[in-house]
Image 1 (cartoon, rainbow, N blue to C red):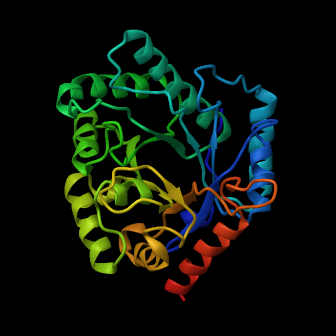
Image 2 (image 1 turned 90 degrees about the horizontal axis):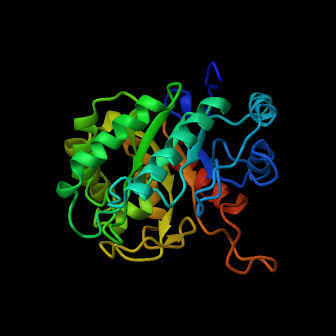
Length: 304
């Protein structure tokens, strides 16, 4: 297992690192070269196909090669995103067991490649409210962290609220963190989700108010990583619809305000945007050089 985590742009004082979610098809280590191709300073990957329960069997050689490729690159933090099927509020025992297994697997892979942590969509209460499931979700998080090796972080993601997802309100995640009491459990703020949930991110005053609410409910020190996505849908829409940086409802001014706020300094911003249309991919092919360049330019403008 990995014995240490590489220091990168997102680990140096005052530096915001701009990274992206990249494919790891063809071997988990291939993600490093793809990230370098779009000049990402940090990366996020799936450890397994996100829409299936079947875990990918990463060989010790593949994990070793990832670590070697990472060390040889100029890429900083590595994050894994858990599969989308997991739901820690699932009522069916089989789905809950599979959900737990998927997170334990992702954290195990994270430990094997020296990743900083795993980002998790906690699940959905299907409109019934977190209170009905808080004991189950809390107990499940404790079990996951007890079973998972190493010290990789588990970051619960803020959500748009579509389908009764846990994390629409900052208080949801604050409640879970306060009950689990683990230094390994933190949060991921997704800008699109947070905006769609009803939190203002388009102006400096709006960002300041949103982060005051985050601090009161969760604590700024529990913010581990940021998903940087513009939003196709409007504020309070509860629609999870990512847009390329500057082309959505948050806009370039919103990202300037976000990048300037003290809560986000030294954090890693991971792009999960659709990407620019091309002949081969009319709807985009995920985070690309254009989006990385756009976000870096806004960062550098704010901090010049």
